[in-house]
Image (cartoon, rainbow, N blue to C red; front, top):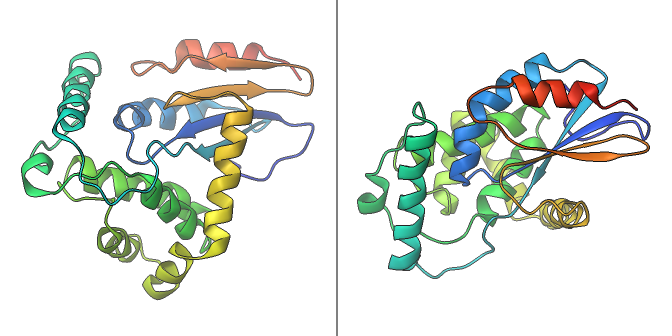
Length: 214
C-alpha cells in the first residue's frame, strides 16, 4: 500500500493522524482492517496532523483532566481500546506532539515501512507503557526498538529536512481542510469526499470509498 508518492490521476485516500492522538489509537484496529480491504487503485497517503506544537511547558492540570477524560470516553465508546493511566503519575505530561510527529518522519527516512512501525511504537509507549513520547530520549529508544539506526535517527530527528517535511504535511492538511484527528478524505481527479471514521466496523467506510469513481 502506497503511503506518500502517488500518481496525479490515482484515487487517493488521505489519512490525517497524530501518533499522540488518543482517538487515532482507538481507530488503529479499524484503520488496519480498512487498509487491507482497499483495492490497489486506492492509494493511502498518511499526513501528520501536528496536534500540539513544540512547548517546554508542562501540561496544565486542566488539560491533563481533559485528556484523561478523553481516554475514559474512548474506553466507553470503543471498549477494546487499552490505556495505562499510570502515565499520569509516572511522567511529566507535556502538551507537545510535534517531536513525536518528527520521529515518524525521521524513521521514514530509513525506509517507508518504518513510518507505520514508529507510529505504533510511539502509541504503545504512550498508551500502554506509560512512557512520554514528548521526550527525545523516549523517541531515540523507540528507534532502537523498531530496529533502525539510532545515531542516524537522532541526526534526522533534528534535521532541517525532517522539519521541512513536517511543515509541508501540516500545510497540506490545512489546505485540504482536514482539522480532526483522525480524518479521512478520498480524492479523485474530479471530486473529494470526507469519510467518517468508524471505530467499530469498516463496512460503511469501505462501501463509501469504493463508490467513489475516478
